[in-house]
Length: 214
Length: 245
Ligand code: B12
Image 1 (cartoon, protein in one colour):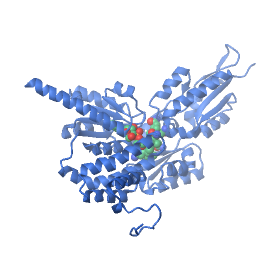
Image 2: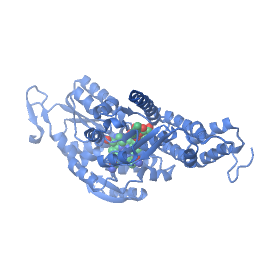
Image 3: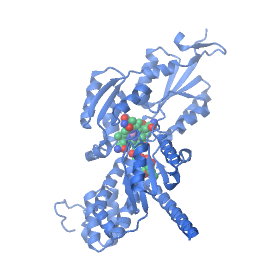
Image 4: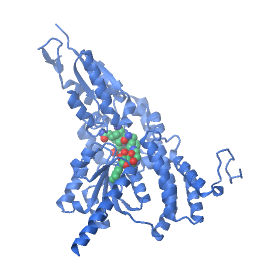
């Protein structure tokens, strides 16, 4: 019997670790991951074209039965979804990764509870210094903290892995920004649910099965 | 070069008061670019002491300097922290000029109420637009962040502006602009205002869809578009006035 054909996941570099974790945890040996640079995050206008190029390159190999995007809209203002629709590629739901980690309902409730929340993920905690402190120029111009975070009250750490080291780093990050700290473990259930929601086509024509049954 | 009090004398050390007007203005453009608030305040005061009209200081030294910053930001040469530094330097100059501008009868271009929409607390772009609008002679009423329909309506009612400006940086908050425009329509006051929208994830098509008058990609374009609409509006107001005679 043929195994399922390969599925390509196109993800944001900021999610690479978590997507690989999901793949390993679920023994999804038929899934492959390719990522776009995480720093596109701050230039989201370039994401749609970059994804289109990846999709076209993958299609050209003829290797994949399906391609999925593990990406938030990420501030493309709907342009990413337009490209994905044109290319016939499904995307995980959510405006950004904070939303699909927490789940839309929970995310909305958190925003309702305190709009002045800065969300951290494991990735952002790990690279807090580079992405937030240096990225926003706070190392060179510490006084800009007020321009950036004047309306913020708290840091909400949406953790993927239970890791005390990261938890301490996240608390330190909140202290550094002079904000309160809240911890909401999310795990990677959002990514897993998305990847589980598709039928997996076997490489042999006609035979299809749903991944949960595997 | 003469000693500059307290400063280490280096080759870049410039004594602003010793520069002629043209060199001083050019130096202020550099200082704005470098985000040097104290130097901008000093340069502003020197030009005023040399009997420059406050409006001339504003446009030639400050606004022109920020225009250059805006171009390099657009072209990816400067980034958000540098732009914030420059904006803060400009603020230092504006703080000196603002009361003088009010007294000296500088040209008034119109009035704008500007705010970020409900659910969104990004405000760097909005603040920059507000500052450049003020620099261009608009009266700017900044109603801050996270504004719901009521907040916009109250501000419009209270301030009777020519322009309503809305900002959104999140995919999830940009649709709220339509809610506001629909509320204006419902009250029959949509056409009393020029509605300008902005924020990185927006585009022209979106602005059309929500029923705004224009999408503004950056602060410089915002000013141009606002002026254009104002002159059209004044043109049509004059025409209406004439028809009524
Ligand atoms: C700086 C920034 C922040 C700062 C904001 C500080 C502040 N006080 O505003 C901080 C770090 C605090 C922040 C926080 C968040 N951010 Co943010 N942020 C950005 C970033 C990098 C730049 C935005 C900016 O200020 N640009 C500089 C200004 C000058 O440009 P601008 O805003 O576009 O404004 C210009 C024009 O658009 C126009 N304009 C703007 N408004 C208006 C209004 C009118 C009337 C007119 C005429 C013109 C106009 O003129 C302006 C001047 O040139 C963008 C990415 C990007 N490149 O856009 C992400 C981005 C907008 N943020 C994003 C996100 C997700 C968040 C967070 C949720 C992240 C988190 N970890 O918690 C939080 C928000 C939390 C909350 N509770 O809402 C996403 C949005 C994704 C999406 N799907 O919508 C983006 C796209 C980054 C990303 N890809 O993840 N952010």
